[in-house]
Length: 274
Length: 159
View 1 (cartoon, each protein chain N blue to C red):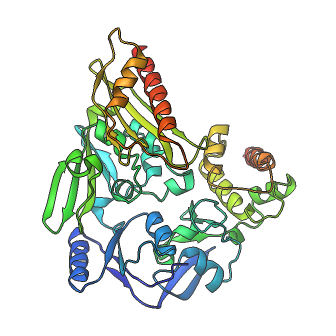
View 2: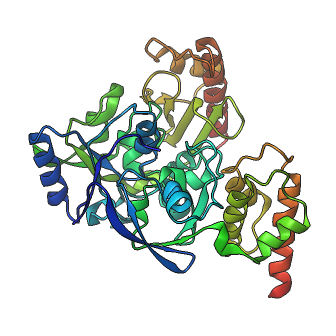
View 3: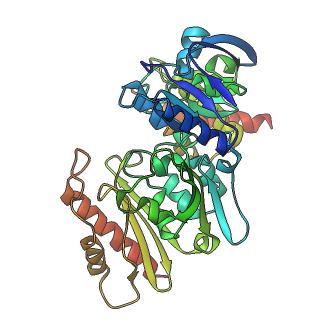
């Protein structure tokens, strides 16, 4: 059980949500935004966080739903990973989402929660970084649409009071050849040792990885239609990773390096056959 | 806008019945089902969303009730294992000896029931993908797989 009390709000509009948040903060309270709630509940249960209020965004129209206007795809922050997988609107995003946690939990985990939560892997960010996604954010300073990389690259996070409303992706990226490979300590489930997403575009492999360092890392686009061996190209990609490489009970830094290089090499070989 | 603070009265629709109960906003659906409504079929296992012993259906889809607030279930339809009495999946689990201690079994039956409702003839990949959400420490999972396949055959025979 959660050993403390909090208030529960379900606003119907973005403005209501922002107003409640602002009002609670001014009173000295500690509200958090709430969507799937899996991370908040599991952390609250052991008192790792103790919010005084949760603001459930699932009723806000702009946060719900996904689709396309032809030129762009959009995904609301409260859309679940299960919905993303099933829609197949952005296959690479579906592949990444479909390997996070397990099937039942994917029906609760939300895109916004995965991007803005405290768990470091944030694997849905990988395809979005490759697709140069933009994110619509609402916050105390107003609403704005900005490149995802401006908000989240290098481990950056949202400012207090900000909320992801929607993510936008140019529809063109959804049809590019792509690969997603996740290696974890157990075969099917668990946090990643390496989670690699890659796209093939204009003769180059675009790639991004989680599990290597403490945040999702966008790697340099790598020309692969050349005579360099796939192993050498994979080594070059690895050399971009800033220190430190994660070293924990799931895998040593050396093991993650090995897994990354092999996975990247296989992705390059795969795209070279196209 | 809905606001819940302190102990408040909510109405939950569980297994087709309406229940009025007092909850804290911080109460999980699992706690309320077991302690307030006496529906102890959903089990407290890990209470961390890993084991699946607490799985119930919300609007027909499986949810790990240890990671859902009871307040979120207001206005939605909850089905617990008690609401699946006599269903083909429950029967298949019994006939295929797909349990030993039985603690995980309600969660498995709930997920299987939802799976077959959505995919009456699921392939092995889909079955495995859905059932990875639940852990059994007693069996080898083979009996559970056999139960699912038996339920698929039963559903196919009925159609």
